[in-house]
Image (cartoon, rainbow over all chains, first blue to last red; front, top):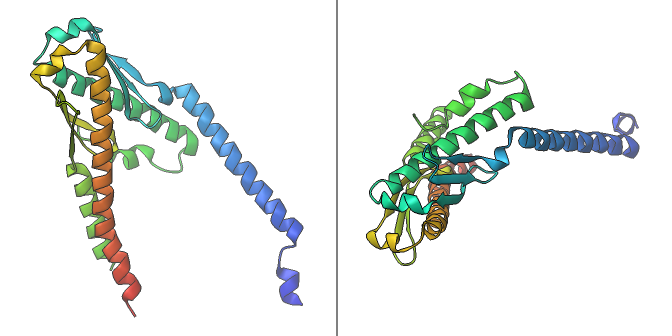
Length: 122
Length: 95
């Protein structure tokens, strides 16, 4: 009897589920809003001479590489230039996602310290 | 026990830092060496790559990067499974 009294009613359980669902939806909405604000799903960088372009997807992976025909002259350096531009794009992506994480979770955790463990050395 | 798991986590981080995978385009124009998480370490354009247009080289390089990065992710995941899977298996078998 006392066990039953301590147990939440089905209505209370449903209310808890509804609250959890609302919180989860609010978190997803906040993530999507911040993602749009910071533009993490559209990181695109250009080389200084404008001949190369790298676009990342929403996960920070290379999606597109644009090579201007004029860049084809630089046979020896084209590959390394692409590698450098991809690294630049990934750094920009990391900066944006770090700032996003900071805005998502506030000052509850040291976001920089955590993410720095996983960043490649400069 | 905790020392052991910390050692394995440190080993996991080392594996992640050192893991690489290579992919070569179908006709050998582009070779890419990538790490896990989309890191690109090397793009090697062979001489016959320059018979292609700039647009084609870009497309082919991006596609080859995706293959190399996926292989690096898979290799790292397998290494981590081997490293930590054995640990949790041992934990389950402890009386």
